[in-house]
Image 1: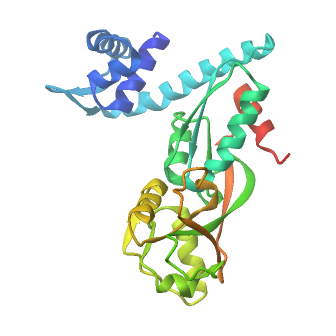
Image 2: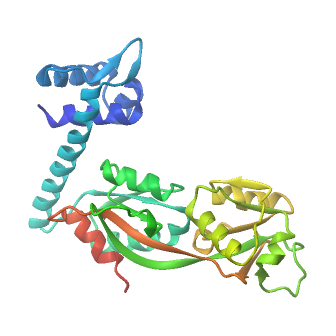
Amino acid sequence: MLLTQLEYFLALAREQHFGRAAAASFVSPSTLSEAVRKLEAELGVPLVHRGRSFEGLTGEGELVLVWARRIVADHRALSDEIAVARERLATRARFGVIPSGIAAVSRIVTRLSDANPLVSCSIASGLTSEEIVARLRSYELDAGIIHPSAADGPDLHTVPLASVRAVVVCGADAFDADVDEVTGEMLARAPLCLLSPGMRARQVFDQEMHAHGLDLAPRVETDSVEALLALVSEGSWTAVVPESSLGGRLDPGLRVLPLVDPEVRTPLALVRIADDPAPPLSTAIDAVSRPA
């Protein structure tokens, strides 16, 4: 059994398509298909349902998938251990982040890169906490920024992070010029657009509003902060977004106002798989995630 065979099999399971899996692995479809067939021959079971195209994994394939992810992850950790012994940690750190965690992951990635110049990073944004946890458990991510309530098992190691305040983004004429903060009751009278109900920042928002006797009904919902900001830029919409998600993307002429009565804050945590011993990359991420 070759490591490359497992890596090609993981790519196929992830992409659900021979051509896309081959492209992601930088090999031809025939090379990838032959590697998977050799893996099947060695294990003595079919791993893939084949018709005219990929039709899913067999039951045995699902079982092998779990072990393949772990074997590839362990091989990567071993390589990192050797690199650390040579004082040259050189690997790729894969982060997943919910919309509220953009600023937090930016700080962590910057600190990680400064402390480990040979480590590169990738960030998958716009995910839900549950999606991030699932990808951690399948070893598709190395760490994530999530709502801490989604860290639902002893297999997860969490580091608490600072909470993020929700703010109101609106056009210049949405509220009187002398208004310098927005209440929940004011939002109830505004043309409101919010994040989708399945996202934790929205759930926290709804809970706080409900606790203050307010059940707001947005006219537009989306899973993208970018879409909310575009709506506000194009029309007379009022949006509520995590303050940390704004960055420098705000169009001139828009206003950002504090949300009060109630104030809404989303707690955050960095989470990773609680491997013991922790791989070198996990140790490096932990070191830069603690409060300065």
